[in-house]
Length: 398
Image (tube, rainbow, N blue to C red; front, side):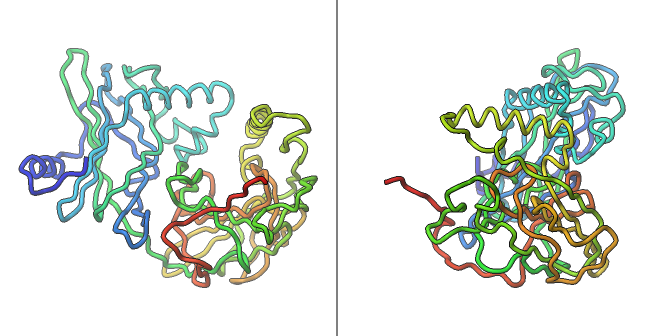
C-alpha cells in the first residue's frame, strides 16, 4: 500500500511509526547487515527507488515463550511518502525451516552467509540460540527471514520493522527496530576491472541472483560475447572454448592484496549437460555436485580462484574482490602493493560457475563472504547503448 499523506489515516500512521519507541518488550529484532540499507535507482530517471532489507532475525531474548503473529516493514520518507509491507508468515516459517534443515545436513555456511558471521547464529545473535520450528518462540529461540525487496516512488529516509507477538497470557506485545536509508558515497575512485566491451549481468536489479545475499548484493558478473551474441564458441569441451577466457583482470584502484585463493581447477564434465541427459536431470546432478563441494570448502566452491584488495581514501577503507579466476593466472600474493590498472590475473571459470566470467564486488570488510556489499561505480565506463529498457541477449533456434 502506497499511502498519500493527504489522508488523516496515513498521517496518523506515519506519526505513530516515527514516534514508536525502538525497544522490545517481547523480543529483539536483529537486522543484518546493520542499522542502514542503501537506496538504489531501480529505473534511473523514472523516480523509483528500490532497496533490500536483507536478513531479519526475530529472537526471543526473554524468559517466557511468545508466539509471533506478524512482521511488518514500513518505509517512510521525510516528505510524507509511506509504504507498508507485511511479511507472509508462511514465508518466514518456511525460510527458517529451510535454513535449519540445511544446517542439519552440514550446509550451515549458507545461513552464516546470510548472517554475515562465519561462526553462525551464536556469533550473530547469542550463545545457544536455536531456530524455532514454528511461530512459537521458546526463550532463546529465533525465526529468520531474508531478502525483503521493496520499491517505492519516493525518496526513502527510514525503515521501521515491527514484530507482533502474543505472550503466554495471549497479551499482544510488539518489538520494533528502525533502520536508516542511505545513498552511496564513493570515497575511492574505481576504474573497471576489464578492458573492452563486456556484457554486465547480475547487476543490482530484482532479477539478480546476487541481490538476495548481503555480502554480494551489488556484485556484477562480466561476460564476453561473440559476434552472434553467444558466450561460447560452440564446442563447450573446456572453458577455453568460452569467449573472454584468459582476458586480463586489472586492479580497480591502488591498494594492498590481503587475500588470495588459488589452485582451483574446474571439472567441465561435472558441470556440463551430458549426451542424452535432460535439462532437469542435468540441473539436479550439477546441483548435487555443487552442494558436495560447498560442504567440503565453501569459499573455494563459491569463488574459485579469487583476489581481495584493500583500498583506502580519506580514512575510508573498502575492499575489491575478483572471483572465478583462471587457474595459474594470479600473479600477486597477500601483502603485495598494486597500482590502479595493474594486471593481477585472468578471467576464468572456477568455483560456482558454469560459464567463463568475472565476478566482481566491493565490500566494506576484508571477508568477501561475511561483510556488507557496497554499490560500485566505475569512472571509466560508458554504456554502448541507452534505451528505455536494459534488455538482454536472446537466441532463437531456426
